[in-house]
Amino acid sequence: MDADLSPDAALAADIERVKLSHPKTRELYREVCALLFFRYGITPTANRLYQLVRRGSMGTPTQVLGEFWTELREKSRVRIEHPDLPADLGAAAGELVATLWTRATASAATALDALRDEVESARADAQLSVTTARDELGRVETALEQRTAALLAAQVEVRELEKAQAEGHAQRQALEAELERSRAALTARDRELVEVREGFSRDLDKLREAAERAEERLRASEKRALLEIDRERSAAAKLQKELDETTRRVEQKEADHRRASEIMQTQLGETRHQAGVLQGRLDAVQAENTRLQSEIIALREKQASAREISERAAPAADRRTPRATRPARSVPAKPLTRRRKTI
Image (cartoon, rainbow, N blue to C red; front, top):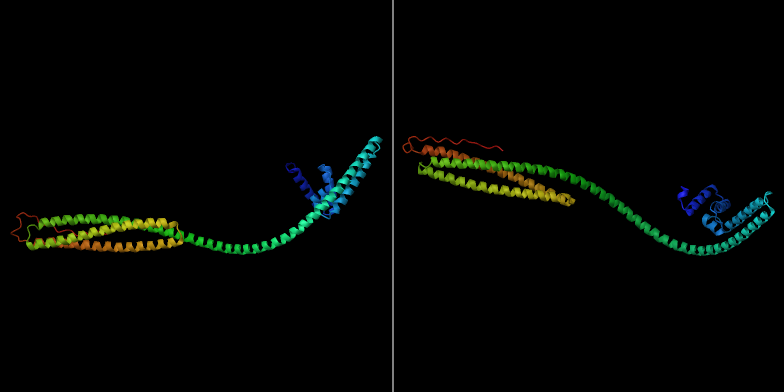
C-alpha cells in the first residue's frame, strides 16, 4: 500500500504511526529526525520538524535537532575512529562531519529565526482569526438554530406529507377498485341496453305484423270496428313515438355514460379533490342508470299494455262483423298469442 502513495503521503503516514508509538514530545521529535534523515534522505530542520509534528514549544524541535546532530556526530566519530580505517580517511571524515554540523547548526538557527517570525505573524493572524471566528461562530450558531428549527418544521411537514401520500395512495387504490366495478357495471348495462333494443325491435316488428293482420281482418268489418281500429292505430302510433323517444333518450344516456367514463378515467391520476369530484359524478351516473332502468321498466309495461289492447281489439272486431257479410270460405282469425319478454 505504501508503494502506491506519494512521498509526502507516505511521510505523513509514517509520522502518524510514530506519533502513536511515541507519545512523549521529545522522543517523537527525535524519531521524526531519524525518519527524515535515514529513510527519506531529508535534512531535518527545526521549522520542518515543527510543521510535521505540531507539538510542544518552538524551542523543543531546535533542542531535539541539536541533540540529534550531536548524537549523530558522536556515532560518526566512533565509526571514524575504527581501527581499520586509515588515518587520513578518518581525518577527512571528521572534517566532513564538522562541516555538516556547522552548516546544519547555521541552517537550524536561520530556520528557527524564520520560524519565530512566522509563528509570531501566525499568532497575530490567529488572534485576529479567533476574533473573527468567534463572531462568525455566533452568526453560525444563530443560523444553525434557525436552520434547526426549520429542519424540525420540515421534518414534521415531511411526516405529514408522507401520511397524506399514504392516505392518497389508499384512496387511489379504493377509487381504482370502484372505477373497475363501475366499468364492469357499465359494460353489463351496455349489454343489457343492447338486449333491450333488440327486444324492442322484435316486439315492434311483431306489433307491426299484428297491426297489418288486424287491418286485413277488419277491412270488411263495421264502421264502429274501423273506428276502434283507428283508435288502436293511433294508440300504436303514439306508443311508437314514445318508443322512438325513449330509444333516443337511451342512446343519449349511453353517450353521456361513455363521456362520463372517459372523464372519470382522465381524472383518475389527479388530486384527492378531483377524486372526490369523480366519486360524485360516479354517484350521479349510478342514479341516472337507476332512473333509466325505471324508464325502461315503465316502457315495457306500456308496450305490454298496448300489445294486450291490440290483442283484445282483434277478437272484438271479429265478433261485431255480421255473418252474412263475411266471405263464405273465410278463415277465422287466430287470436294473438300473448308473449312477454323477460329481461
